[in-house]
Length: 328
Image (cartoon, rainbow, N blue to C red; front, top):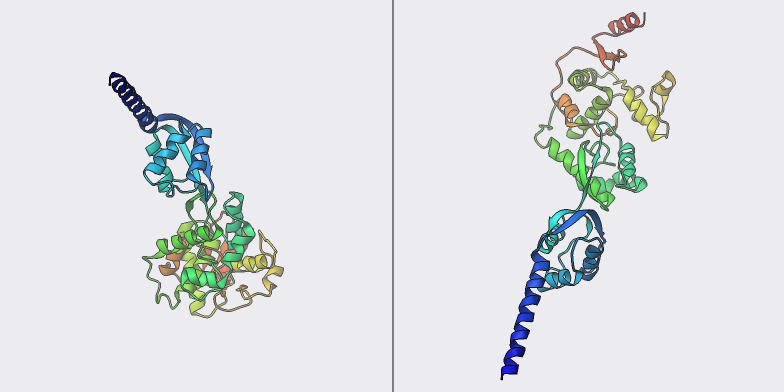
């Protein structure tokens, strides 16, 4: 009887010791040097435990595995790249993996970029395959699905902003985020009807204003020039539309020459009346606002004065005279 009691006592002590040891491994925070770990899609809880142990994030892969199995959370761990640093216990690590708090990378899309140039920026940061991105943006069915408009491409809808994306997301995911940001930024704008233009026409004109104006304070004045020209049926004669027409033909121009004005394209506003058939870039909301609330002017002409700003005139003769005076 005494032997049985001794065995029982020893067993109880061992059980308590194991329980304390296990609880300590689970709850005691471990100091983690800064580390990023990649959890591929489809990895099992055992695979994840092994990786965490190899990176010195946990003290025991067996205890980690038992913990997630015991609480039935082994199937809820999310894939992706994770950043761990500081003192963390197993429950805290599991919470990060459960909530999918993956590492985010920052990228800034500047104002006035075309689909192709946006794809190039994202590709340089390793976010997208450039060709896949461009192909998706030019998929009319996909464009209509995201915008609700019968358009041929997403030109104009890839909103310029600073974004934070997880690693290993698809081109579709990123495109959707950019388009969602466009509608988020413009949701309070009164588009219909405005200045006799439809929603899409306002976006088209805003894209031209975006490309013309280096300084935002000039955007309402530039918008007024184009709106005046539309009202009186003048050709817009906007250099950025020619640059875009040339870009579509694989010709990149930093400066537009007289010979370029003859390019055969529906985007060439030197040859065609009215607006181009689609936006020529993705404008920021300031350019859209400028079209919706333009300056009240009688201007029909403007030109760059060499400082990045523009000179505005009412008549063509004034336009020529001021150019000649500046060139003296």
